Length: 279
Ligand code: C2E
Ligand code: CA
Ligand code: CA
Ligand code: CA
Image (cartoon, rainbow, N blue to C red; front, side, top):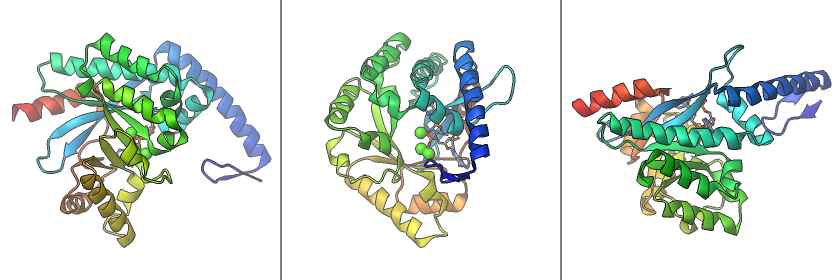
């Protein structure tokens, strides 16, 4: 038996072989999917705790294969990341999300910022700043309406260049969010050095809210720290009203989760916005 570092599952040799075969099959399907444009973006609202209004949407990729079963991004993103194909898909995501934000504006809706996930490999790519600049220029989206989500792990993996790269991204006007905050085993020192705008508290902490006194304290501490550092704080994976109430009492700015809205296709996200803005 061998340990799989990513999730700690135990695999026997046969299972490992089978997994490798599946993996290879999946990999070549993904390769074709990128050229066949089998991907679609869904949008999940981030909601203001005080007013209940939509503050923006996170773009989340979905795979709609022409044949065969779709696979969760939690499975295929890491695979694309390993093979480097994430660069091609990530660039499409960036362009498409920017175009969508422009379409919403063209449809007469107020400013709706859109958040895009940058994978570690994308963030480490030498041309990342240029790629973001191009997505903004091609779509005509003002930088302020684009937010980039970078995981804490990706921020930490870097050295001196990280600070410079983040500075260049900020110079484009974009917002920067730390994704999966609290899971990166980091020193927190980076928060004072990097030009970060937002912390997204990882769902794993939100899951324990109201049930696990330690989770409550951790979340309270992150929110207080965010306020002290003038960062916006978003709680991820909020699924029930008691979590929302607790977050409200702790002073959390915004929430994202099934309670307030699942990820939906752009057209449905637009319906939500139009209804809100007409009210
Ligand atoms: P993430 O960036 O942390 O995104 C949040 C994930 O949590 C999404 O899963 C979302 O659908 C899910 N989620 C939101 N609210 C709830 C909730 O209340 N309960 C539960 N159980 N789940 C909730 P999704 O869309 O399956 O994406 C999984 C991960 O795949 C993302 O985690 C992100 O790391 C990655 N990903 C998705 N789209 C992209 C993309 O376009 N580019 C990159 N680089 N990564 C992406
Ligand atoms: Ca994210
Ligand atoms: Ca996240
Ligand atoms: Ca996550």
